Length: 191
Image (cartoon, rainbow, N blue to C red; front, side, top):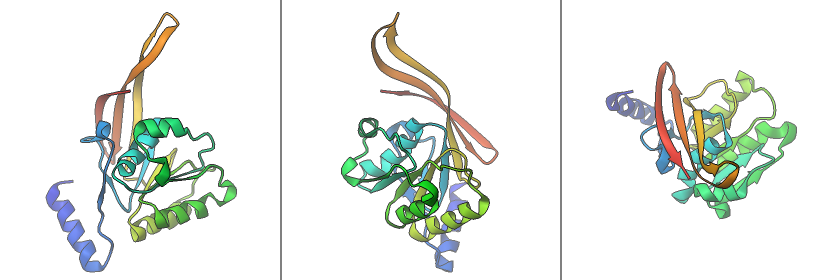
């Protein structure tokens, strides 16, 4: 969307009393590719991308949360820059995943959700309304009915291990951002 269209949408929302859709910081590796906004849902296809989208908000001092992620990697989160002192983790929400996600959305800027079941459009719309009302952002690791954009890793190459010896140094990833009918890609190097 052009800057003028975004500005007009924000003015209309302000006149209607709706919360303004604010931008949420993203990790420096993702700047220029994806811009998170409050009141919206985003989908990713990997743990690394889920951490990357939450990291920007955490690095800027916001609280973030993770739900449905039983094998959450605290060390990996720290390496992305997520401050664990301002992180809420609900590893196994069970059948109450929607209620848990809604409660986290009420108090946190970014919530990463790994749904335990297929999400129906009605459940998604309940959470979407809550996101808009609370000026929060949802990152879903998996499928979600209505999303602002989908970020996926198309190609991943690791560097550092040669002939079964050595240490992993970094990885090169081709990231793809799908927003409606528009698609953008970027190659990034991650530590």
